[in-house]
Image (cartoon, rainbow, N blue to C red; front, side, top):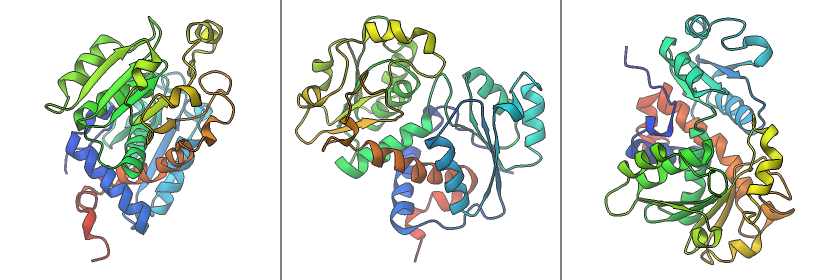
Length: 316
């Protein structure tokens, strides 16, 4: 039996594998899906609320011919109702893959260590690789090859920012983040991202000035200032992030051809003004829709690697 592929971080994928999944996602989007998951079942363990992640995975599994079992917080209670190790080993006898949206990266890693089937990170406190795959697909669709592009991330150095930072430089792109002092990414992440940078092109810029970050940017990206689990810090963060709202004025400082991205949900009046997701340069809704195709391609990569590695074979 081949070694299982866990996708716990965007770094679980080599740069060429990331590009292969993007190519596959584009093909699925344009031509439709094969029943590559026929006869396979997937468990979705979610201990956090979800709209895009849950819906896109469940619809994607169905379109690929598979069957999904949704297990919410009340059904599982990772590490509370039962030990994580027991849950992993029991599910491994029922399903072919586990998709987990959890509060702790450590819990995710424990789940994967005891599971004999692949585990995919559908969001943790540390990373959000599935979101990044959809983001890369969206950039590729609107701007072409990711190599030598610049993405400016305005806001908190959170899980979404971390996955983007770890991915873009490895593909030859620049990741520039502007955040207030104390809210930027940790140095270990930045050092790792720089070590993965594609020779000559990939780069990471740590800034505090949003205008400097968006200068010459191909993509301007923002996210909520207080993520799930940080609600008690919301007032403090609103004060810290004054001046970091991404509106038409800030977007105009980027390239004229730049696109605006937001992973949603949006907190209007905070990181974006009302109507910003409908701005002519916004691709936020296409970005959300691309979660479906990127995750379908990722599922094929994990569960049907022979099909996923030969994207041009469909229809021949």
